[in-house]
Length: 415
Image (cartoon, rainbow, N blue to C red; front, side, top):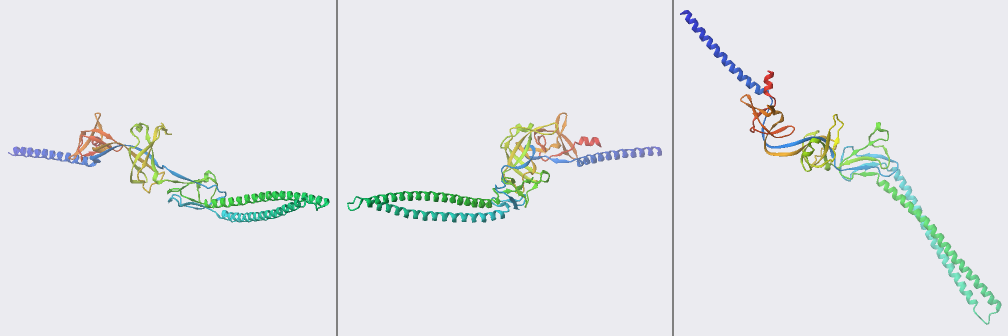
């Protein structure tokens, strides 16, 4: 009995040990499946509109801008500047030059003009006096001629000597009349010449005054349109010391001083790879992103595509086309030169199941995803409907399904 009892107890103990080992194995495997599902990064499949896009990089540019040049005025010195990068409205002052020298010149030119006008008025008055005096002398000369002519009339009571004297007096009177007519013509020509010369001097003085006033008016440059003022670099001290123009700088006539881009005409200038050129076109919708404002997404449309490809300096060299998208409603914080990108929408799927592109793997030449179910991952074959750099539209996975973003089989193999 003792041997039989010991055998029965040994069998019972062995059976319990086997049962305990089996239960522990099941528990461990269940625990391991849950652990694997929790360790991998996952994402949910969502249902909605899917946008197939082409992503490109570029920078903001102004479609329209106004250049500001120094006026055609000598000896210009900057006395005041608007702040570089400041937003200015149309008609507001941007640059003021020192006008003290021009103001002094204006006072001198106006004094010269007044003197020229006074001299001209005096010459005109003197010419009138001379003309009146000449006319009086002309009347006297004509009177003497007529008087002498009457003395030569036939008269039986006048002797021959007196008659001859009368004829001589008539000849002298006529000669004096001719001399007076010549003097009148000489005085008129001389006065006209003097008046013309003084008139030219007066006109020149008036032109100098108007020129000086015009230069003074150009001492303040106003903004031709609203935008951000960007001052050019001053290379007068050499290219190594070039800095934006500042107060006190001397500038030459016609120099480019600043530029005001029209902030309402901002466009995204981006490069599109040669392989994607045939998939885009004018009028395509675009979503613009700016690196400095990552929370901002701007709607736009492609307005222009360069007809020729550009060759890059990379090795190996690549070709690309420039595409321009006009911003529909630019944010006031945007500035030309900001780096960013644009997503060109080439296709829209109104109701599609989309998952991250990292959730798609390849098995036996077919795209598959790993769907999380009860702590483990089930392999599911899917069909790719559309793709963009971040997401893919698929069929074969229900909306809301949780898919792995890493290959669970490789994860298990590492363990």
